[in-house]
Length: 135
Length: 443
Ligand SMILES: [Zn+2]
Image 1 (tube, each protein chain N blue to C red):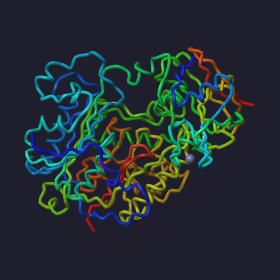
Image 2: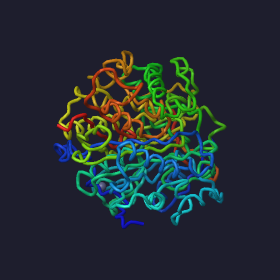
Image 3: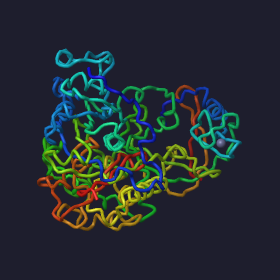
Image 4: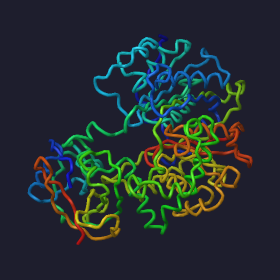
């Protein structure tokens, strides 16, 4: 899919660099042993900054829900309509979720609760982004 | 300019965002009296008097006249500074000369055109000679309504105007700008590349809802049809003023998808509009032109999604908590609600709002069953008698206007047939909103 390319910054560079190495990492707070995503400058729960690091996760999850996009304002995606847009929950913590186009899956026929695994897709500026496929 | 204390951000202490706070200390002591709505339009025609600033002045003057209050009696003003429907003034485009000639400008050339500051209102309504305090209430009329009620209860003002204006320009909104760029920076980089439109979040929650409770999108049709019908009975609404077309269940079911399962009619139409209220103390309200409608309590939700996408379960927790806060603060029970005007722009989350309240005795997963019965203004359980955003265009204020008018007994063709005493309205979204229980009686 011709996605917009994310431009990393100091806050999230660890996440995006790991994507370029095809590893999925999530920001983790060691002070309260909690994952958070998207990354923040401090733990949302306890406020710790020093306790934050990038924790590798398995790259496995389930489909929480989805929609089928027919009318997006994002120009890059308009030629692809209609397309699936799912919410994927991570096995390590279902409270952490990510979006996915579920490449290869049939349009508007996705199993809620279905198992997925991560893959990485290269966007226009070379930055890789996490995507997911049904397993 | 009068010497006005301008509060840029209402302090957190003005909101009742926690359970366990007990009865609202100002219960029955603050009242809504006057309502003013400017004429609606689909887009700005670039005449000065139809700018968001011009419409706002119209609405504010109408609210005072409606209440029978002279401008010198007003000492408070609560303004929502954000006025965009999603439309932005094009970079480099000059503000029309007629507009600049008609109004006093602030330092910001787009004030009154693409936003509204309290200063702009103060400069352009010199009749507000005794204004003491002006408060910015971000985003939404519901925020302004609870801030104004709290401000009056706390004694910051005794007679307060409350304003929300909207601008909409030519062109499809949200197109262009960052959405047209090949790259994305800032917090949007975790979502924008996937290209979900604004209604996507609600759509995926509703998809989960259908899965969880065994429901279908078609079952929403009676709600949308009822909303349009009620909207067409509102002479101030966009559809009644410009496109008086009844909507059928077939029209709804066959409408194009935006993000399935959210279609065109699950989305509200962006318009030019302004609405204003006059609130005062219950004591002063007695002498005004319209019957007072009393605030029983306010409540606010401050839920934050744990992940990128807000889940249905998070929404359900939030709406249930809002219900508990409203009932605790007001002493009102769910079974006391004679009607509800919870927010509906997007229409699908109206379902989550009313299930959280337990309106008409419904439990989780039962709103669509309620919609199969009589939800009209003639029936026992009126749903969205205002018609809401879905039936009137995007303002986020019809809900409060109608709650007040119904309890005053002057909702005209929309007047609910059974006697009504207690109402609820608020929004916008099921999380992060601000809500009110209203009563015909202060006790
Ligand atoms: Zn922590």
